[in-house]
Structure formats: structure tokens, C-alpha cells
Image (cartoon, rainbow, N blue to C red; front, side, top):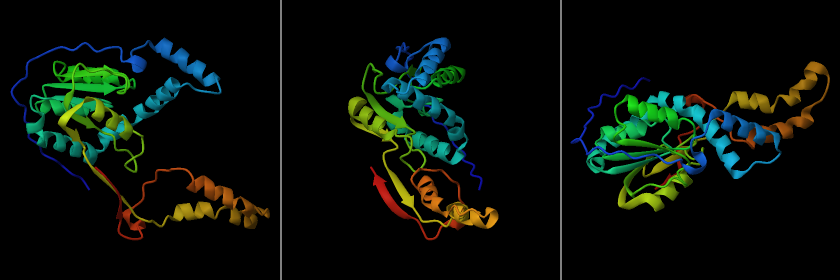
Length: 264
């Protein structure tokens, strides 16, 4: 199904222009590629990792999904429309974009009339975000700050917080705790949080491929004369005990989905 959304972008009165110098961003600050590469090589040779190294590995893995998120038109249009429909609450206000990625939500906020947007991003994509902001002529309103949002210091509290914290299965990617942290620290009393609530629905499915893989080891004997059915337990644990992402057609659903959780 193709969804085409036509939107009218409301840009409020042009705010006063002001510059904000981005700090080093603490642990996620700027560094040369040579320094970052040497640090990664040293970390890979050790059997243990520091918290900073685990964080860096997380951010490097996460940086690969930005194209996937932008390509998800339903998701991106939902965020865009939500921000633009709240233009009255954002016009002339300060906004914090947590885990800004490419900065697309920050740009939406600027288009909605926000006076200043702090786009905080810990992965290396912050450099491209800053370039995208400049390319779209919004560098006077959108300020990209490199570093983990838990360590970046803002010069003021904000009127609104936006964030794409929802991942696969709603809670995958572990971003919610960061959002709650900055909400307590930086959001003004009565400020706006987008998104503010979410519902998780689940439904049982019938998966023929999974059933085949679970029964694979019991079928080996008829092909090779070797009974390997004792491995079924291990195969089941490997398939069931780990989170896996599969795309399945709605016809695989065995009943209507039910609400499993409500976050507000």
C-alpha cells in the first residue's frame, strides 16, 4: 500500500538569529578518524570492554539504521505530521531532539517555527546532520551537539523534546531510558514530549519456516542414517531464546492482535 501525504508547512515569524557554539560533547565528542580507529583496534584485542567502548560500539551499530528509518515513509510521515500539527506549541520555543540521527526531526521542528533546536547525537552521523542543517539553510535555528545526551550540557531548559525512541517491538534499541532522563533534567514544567504515549499489540502467528527449522534435526536420519534428533532441544533454545526480527504476512496471524502494553 502506498501512502501519499500532502502537507502545508507552516513557518512562523522568523525568530531572532543566534549562534551557539557546540561543545566537545564529552565522551562522544569530535576526534580524528585515526584516533578513533586506533582506539577500536585496541579494544578488539582485549577480552573486556570499558563502558565508553561498549557505548561506542552501540552507536556504531545504530548508525547503520538511519537510511532504513528515513525510507520508512509511514513512520517518518507520522513524526512529520505530529510535529507540524503541534506548530502552535513549538512556534518561538526551544526544542531538544534526543538522538537526532540525520537531524530530520530537528528540521521538521524548525519548519514548524521553533526558535532554537538542540540536536544531540552521539554517533558519527552528527557530522552529516550538521551538513544537512547547513544545506537546508537552518544553521541559525538548529544546533547539532555531538555526544551522549546524558553528558551534553545545554545552556537552558527546553519547551519540548522530540525523539525517535521507538524501535522494533516498540522497546528495542533501549532509547526510552535516555528520553526519561532528559525529560527530568531539561524539560520545563508543562513542556511538550513527542511522542508522549505508545501502545504495543501482539498476536500469535503460524510460521512454517520456523516449524521446519525446529524439526530439521529429527529428519537428518532419513537422509544420512545418523540420528541427530537429540539436538532438537538446543535448536529450539537457539531459535526461541534470542530476539529475532522477521517480516511475516498478516495471513500468518492466528487471531486478532491484543494490546500488551500501554506507555504514557
